[in-house]
Length: 129
Image 1 (cartoon, rainbow, N blue to C red):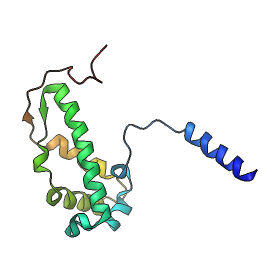
Image 2 (image 1 turned 90 degrees about the vertical axis):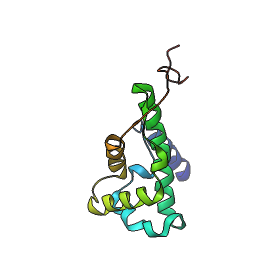
Image 3 (image 1 turned 180 degrees about the horizontal axis):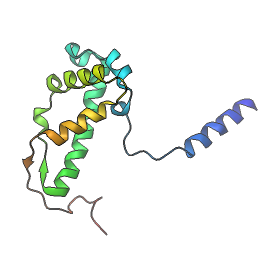
Image 4 (image 1 turned 30 degrees about the vertical axis):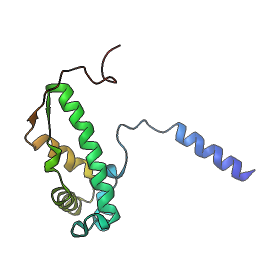
C-alpha cells in the first residue's frame, strides 16, 4: 500500500510540474558538467558526447526559427567538437552557477549568419491552418 501511495504522489508531482520549452543536458548545472567534461577526450567521454549532440539539436531548432524569421541561419558545419567542447567547458568552469545553454545562445547570437533560400511559413507545424 505504501508503494502505491508513493507512485501516486510521483504521478501527481509530475502532472503538476511547470511546462518546459527546453530540457536535457544543456540546461544542467555547469558546476557538474565542468567536472564531467574532458574536451581533449573527444567523444570517448560521455559528457562530451551528450552535450555536443544536445547542442546540435538545439542549434538545428534555432536555425529553423532563424530561417522562419528572416531567412538566415548559422552554418553548423563550423560548429564541430573542436570548437564547441572547449567553449562549453571553459564557460562552465568559469561560471559554475550558470547553464551551458547560456553560452550556446550567445554563440547563436554572435555568429555571422548565412542567407538562406527560405519562404516564411513553410514549416508545416509553424504555418497557420
